[in-house]
Amino acid sequence: MTAMEDAFKKAVETKANDMRTYIWKGPRVNGIQEEIRLVDATYEQLRKYYKHCMEMLYNNDAKYPGRITLLGIITDQIQKCRAELLVRWLKAEKSYPAISCLEDLKAIISNNKEELNDEALKTYPIGDIMNGLPDEFVRVPIRKVMDACLSSLGVMDSSHLTLSFIVKMGLCFTQQEMQKDLLRKDESGKTINRLEVVRRELGLDPKFNLWINFEGGLSYEQFKTLYIFKTGKVNNVVPGRFSNNKVPYTNMTSDLLRLLSNVVLYRFQEQCERQAQQWQDKAAELIRVAEYKGWDITRNIE
Image (cartoon, rainbow, N blue to C red):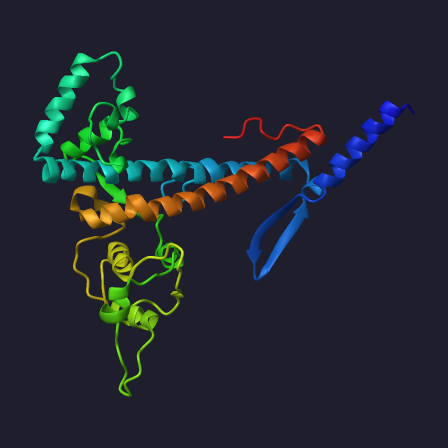
């Protein structure tokens, strides 16, 4: 065996040994989670696992969207929240009503038909044709602004923003909330823990573990706003403003729109990006193992 052949053999063995660390974990059943090394999997198993990765990334099912699909939904929701806020800001701060904004946009589009065609309007930022906007609005697509002018942004489906996710963001009370809004004492005069006060005030299910997060936690007012948004109730009193996780953007308060687009949806976006990367990494491992065995597991995968 030549030196080159020996080096090649060692490289192949190193690659194979590295792949022996690749594990596929099955669903947990009765507390037990089966694991299989990918190098020990059959062709059919590798194809099955790869197809699952693709579903977790690109599934278009409305109830269980893939992470990449969901990232697109989140981006769209952020843009719609900001488009609605922009139209309100123009009216309140610039005395510029929605109908005037719409007519001016149509005039600009008419005079620039080649550059501002229907497809371009979906991504062309409003800040490129409208000066003096706050930073949060400059990248909103023109089409979204026009929809907001017509009150045709539709409804926001917030089913992916679970109450569990909101609780996991944690709480960071303001001084006003600590010293006044949430200050309660028991019969003996002892101050009640503010987290317990929040739980009582909102009638929050005990299964949710409230915690203090000094690095980016929600204020009580923010948490309350989101809790009502998700449940429509405080202490089991249902005001009827929101239902079935679907709320028209025009019905949302500006505070809620701002909280969603500047904080909550961005945090959720980061979580989805991490999850998407994990599935992409696992798919890459599957392809690597399959190629090492001389198989193509990506063919005809929908």
